[in-house]
Length: 369
Ligand code: NAD
Ligand code: GLY
Image 1: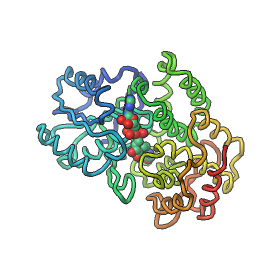
Image 2: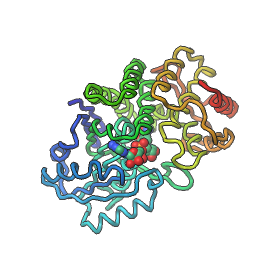
Image 3: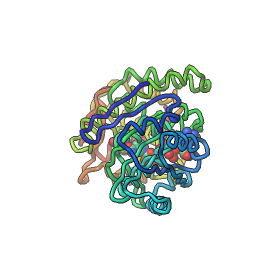
Image 4: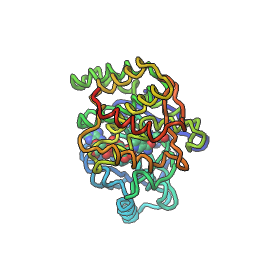
């Protein structure tokens, strides 16, 4: 089974990626130093699909479990849900010897991880991601957070999971739109470190178009593992995003977040906003760093094959998106720190992007590709 290891000193852990891994969860958890009771945190879409298998696997390995379900969606990723879940866990008898199993997409992982970081001043947690977004990105790296009115992910903590168990067969129950949006992060990883992977992603897009076949599913663990490894190596270099390397993972996210935030919550999925942000970053990379047009085309064709948006949807006011971009936490001390590409595989952190450049990039996004 493909594994990806994260070597982070005492915070090191393994990411297991295997078709059917849900049923081995108890066994895998028992091979970490985790003991105590397991609180399974999940959402209302994932619970009926996978919670029973996860509980059964953990119980078979000797763990006592309790299940905690919140309403699915980004709207739930907030402090009041964390409080509700914490109260439920207290009622179920969990203390500092317990651990959390976050079963679901990025919302469950970010919020379950955050709850673990503060429950009894911090308990361990296991990520069991069930979306593409969560399997290749959010479950790995230890960023946990909730949203507040002031912005997305503004209250959070670095809290590395003790283990990540990704079962790509869970992706077969995803709505097509959610499946595709997660692939935007796979394209982002390929653009940062492994442009050769773009071809694999275009092939995968074709196969998904035809519906999941057994052969597609068989290939997934290897493809996911290669993609996860890109993020894993970056996190190892810069666990807490202090030396700039981890910031490369924000490629496409700066304007993407501004665009996402300019619409009512949930109108654009996170990965769809990232797709638009990637197109903007490619435009700026050409404008400011002279990146080759062929490189831009290669990346845009991959996003197009995945049917991800490349043009601003109706309702986005570029001025509002610009304003919200300027208030994003990726702007340090008022200066714009923007991730650009000299070429695919060669990201740079640039302070040279001006408001005029951002305006031009947003203008560019109003044109069809
Ligand atoms: P999500 O968790 O809301 O999942 C999307 C939808 O799919 C939800 O309705 C969910 O219930 C449903 N779902 C999940 N798994 C399913 C399955 N196997 N079958 C059927 N339905 C399923 O959203 P997401 O796209 O997974 O994650 C987005 C979140 O991740 C955002 O909050 C974003 O900020 C966060 N994120 C965090 C990081 C990080 O490093 N921590 C990185 C990227 C994104
Ligand atoms: N998703 C960006 C990061 O983990 O740093």
